[in-house]
Image (cartoon, rainbow, N blue to C red; front, side, top):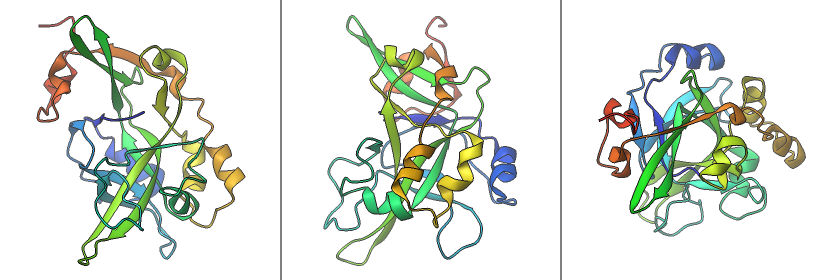
Length: 225
């Protein structure tokens, strides 16, 4: 799964180049992004010809929900995303990309839970496949939200967890964002993820364990004091 992630060094030039976003990509560095936080996503709505970068709540709220879910729907399993009720409408019509430069899992050693930062060796910005939705409360409050798609873990990541977010290579971005594409088989084929096996694992100091902590010091390797 993906329950915490980072965008500590957002590559704004890459965002502008890949998605034609112009100059509106002023992203604050975030080292400890947690469920229900406002997070940046790239999307293209059906009525608009261009991509846009917007902030939405992390944790998909199904459009039919009467209340905010007690447990945020932060992840959607690729095995059931096309058919499971909270996700299937967004899968067909509202897809997005979630920029990140790493995500966290935890390894238990004795009485300690050690955070593991999973990232590419060059620390580059990558894009996780996501879905977004619009929810209106009974009182008329409108909230846009998102979820991150996951698959079974492979490569080094499998040593710390059995699930991992789906990372899309650049060649698949345009089709994933295109709201005119809705055929299930085509979309599922786009989610074949061969790139994340190149990621590395870095054990960190336990500062990440608290969602209250934020800042570059969260990336201090475990060996350092």
